[in-house]
Length: 75
Image 1: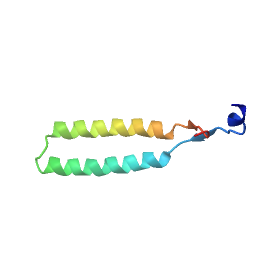
Image 2 (image 1 turned 120 degrees about the horizontal axis):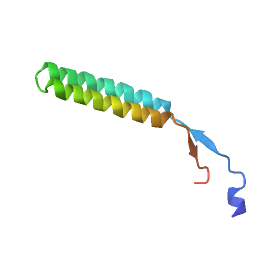
Image 3 (image 1 turned 90 degrees about the vertical axis):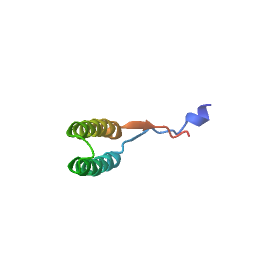
Image 4 (image 1 turned 45 degrees about the vertical axis):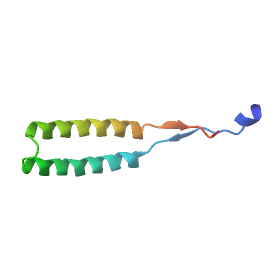
């Protein structure tokens, strides 16, 4: 068992590119929802709800993707 753990180094990973991708995707979806609002397909309350939901989701995903996590080199 000792030989398996010998030479292991801890690395920490983060993925800020994923955050940027989520922001861009959110902006694209927001533009689609605005077009639906302007076409009368959704109500303004629904538009505001979707915008808030996506903004909150994006903030959470960005916080998690920027957080450094340990990478296990044994597997």
